[in-house]
Image 1 (spheres, helix red, strand yellow):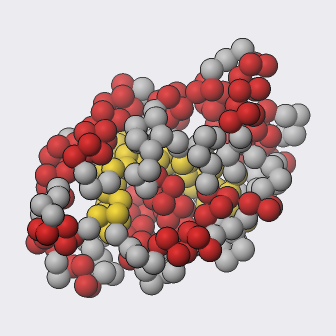
Image 2 (cartoon, rainbow, N blue to C red; image 1 turned 90 degrees about the vertical axis):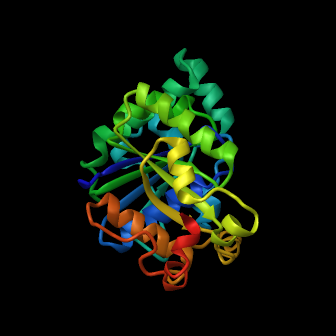
Length: 272
């Protein structure tokens, strides 16, 4: 698989782990030596500033792309523990309504316009970003409006039949909207539950969604504590290892599904 420099994270459902995947991937790209811009497009449930513990520093947001300030001059928020990762926080729902009304457009087209302004200047910034990762909200209007701007789209699902069906629906809409390569990411995957609760295994999920799977983020009991603290997942955690594997695959490397997770690698048969 070739390397990609623009990623959109999407789903037609909320609460399936899009923000976890977007943040985890952005962090691992940064740890792999890339300068990464993480943009939050979810104005209704904006959370990336909270997950990074920088809500008090979020003085500028996506809404500032529509002001007289040149996009290349908008101050971004570098992560305190990983300076090569910067965040552009989401605008508020009120900002979306106001700007859409002023510009006589829809919220989805407003997001697209902002992304076009951002992409036009992304490489002109002094910080010289290598990769843009965009998180979206539940629903597909904004994601579909901007889909053709992204050569790689990550469709996120959790381990349930309804989520699998939603991923398939999302992939169909995004493909029609002009998205580039579409790949499935399964979040909060519980290997034990495949046998214990007869929940969906990996082959069943991939077959049901008709999407190739780029990675699995296992259930990780340490993740919620990190999110509550507003800090990145520990680099030794299952979440970080899984996101590192996905990031490396997106960069063009062949990486086994559970590389760096020996405890899970021994249970691979449960995931099939």
